[in-house]
Image 1 (cartoon, rainbow, N blue to C red):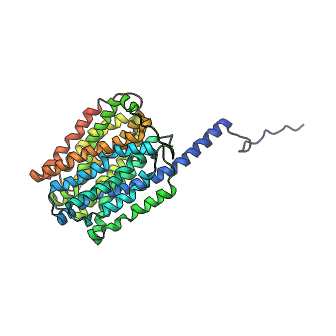
Image 2 (spheres, rainbow, N blue to C red; image 1 turned 180 degrees about the vertical axis):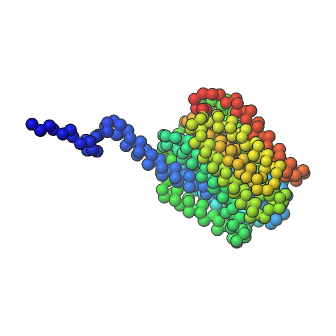
Image 3 (spheres, rainbow, N blue to C red; image 1 turned 90 degrees about the vertical axis):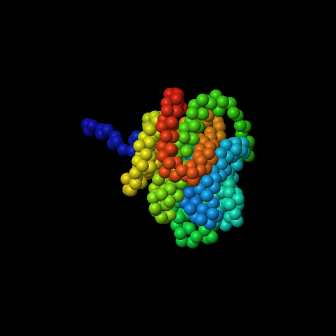
Length: 413
């Protein structure tokens, strides 16, 4: 009698548990559904912040064309962050109430058209008005996009948020180089052609962006209760963003002027260095989101604040290639916290994600820029840019002390 062979082990004899297979299929479908919005929001964020990063590179040309002082140049930067950042909670409030995707769809075109047309302003007051309108496009994008970019990502939301935010930071990094190239080739009068990418992205968003969170046709009710319940850690997070943004924004705004006036760089070279600094920040933001998924957001904030100080000091007090390398490293470490603060805030009050995003990326950023960009310009006019930059190094240390007060509990680790 011949013994029967056991059945061969192949793919047809092995079946997954039906419940596990269904769960895996649901997860895969969710990841695919979340991929398109994340990609579109990230693409739009890149170009929105490309225009956001233009003003610093354009300032030497605008100073020459309009005959303005460093203090007035600082006021331009203050207007940019007021309309583009301080006003973000207002945009976030209406975004949460209406659920309209127009806050996101129209933003790249509006930012591109007004920022790229600054050379056509009839006067300094007209210049201020155009900066305000361009920044309104920038500011209206961020609350809704930040609340929705990683909405469907269940695994590693910090990584998804880091990808979205790093796309914007990379756009800001390339903004000075992009506008330096455009103005170097065609001048301020033909600079409006630089708006074409923003208009094209708005068309893409109109055609392909799904309805945003809040569900089309509904009006979600704004409830301040969840924010009041977590006011203490939310306030600490807010001021941590303010402190980081003081350094980040002021360096970004005045680096081209500082490098051309105090270190003898050409405008093109100064713009390239500014782009390198911001590119380091983009990489740092992506790294920070990934690291926070492993060791916790509070720890990342502490490392970022303390670790950036020696690099920034080396840049301010030395010259040459090592000075520039230290600047890039300082930007990288400092911007570890960009996605971390946002995700921590959204976990504390998930029902008001748009408003929280506006607080973390808008109001805090704007408060820093609206006050300290003009103040830095005033200090530079009355003392020196070197003196002003040296004073900025103290801010990360203040942030480190403040971060120690963040509670060690779920949502903040």
